[in-house]
Image (tube, rainbow, N blue to C red):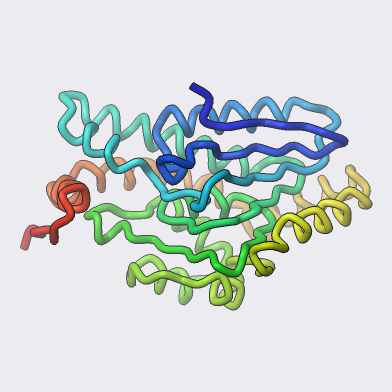
Length: 260
């Protein structure tokens, strides 16, 4: 089953998250398909810019908690957590390191691991009805691999608020923190993204590639290393008793009973 769609036309690649019935929640298979799609786009010598978008009302609800609950009861849970964390890391670092500009066209809410996906992109454009949240601590887990990307984008102050409070951040506040570059009326999102694409395509491909390389060198040289080193943190956090309790409580629609 294809969980993404990929299109390419006149230098523009588009990868669409296409699991709307599950709010585009990320399973391992979903992440692997996204990674494969990105790598196929990267092979194209005529790729100028890559757009990430989604179908349905939600851009991405983060990791599929039902699959995570299955992992928690698996006889090979530790190995599964490690593999899940590795493939998610590979997706984020591959997107972040692409030599062409990347755009996240955000039409709906983004939560948890979905925030890592958009933060790996260079340019983030959101509809004004969108909100963002990192509710991991309320599930007994941590947004380990999202943290370096969030810190890079907004700094420690705003990142701490998102990571620790669990509160929703509106698109407008997201723009104020520097996480989002532009917020537009919902009905204007497509038009705004197309204008951005037109502007990018008017530039020199070589100059844009050099510019992106220089941006990473000057301000984000350690990001890939930091995300990669967060694999163990993420996998370990998912294996705790609180993680099992948090996931169970969420799926059973009750308050979690944390370890004291």
